[in-house]
Image (cartoon, rainbow, N blue to C red; front, side, top):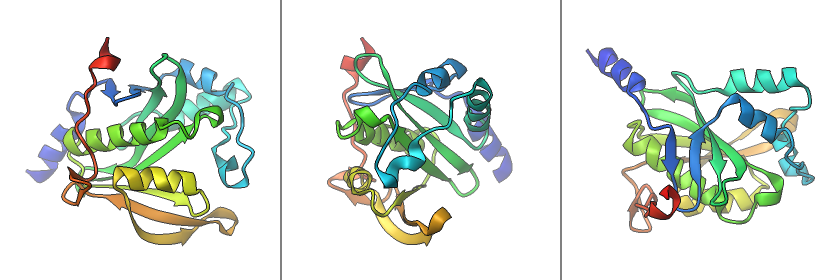
Length: 199
């Protein structure tokens, strides 16, 4: 009985577009990856992991097929108010039995520190809680990436631990739960007025 309701939830039609205050999240398609291949690189050592290897068509096809939305994954591109593709965001390892998923985001190097990431994360967390029914959203972030950490804290994520990743890099483990009020909002996620992005 429980597994049936989980299956129904995971197969329920979902919106192809998620609205934030400043950005729109749209399900990623193959043509988006060709645009992402032209993004400028990050030069900061702690952000070089976000430089996507998309030089060859076979690399772009592999990236798309591996990351596309499915039963346990949702992948979106981030579109700014000018209609430009400025990032990618998604959920992986979605477990509808435990109501948990892991968030990941990359903003193109020349668009960071403009509030785009914060708005995109807030919009996806809201969707994860209200539409997917998740009760925990997790993420990990390199401990020296203070800009991203501030973004996640503004949304309402809190530190729950640390782990070491490849090359002995230390990552902070963070989570957000809908039942933890932060700044007067459930899970730190506030209701936004999206009318200016719909027109």
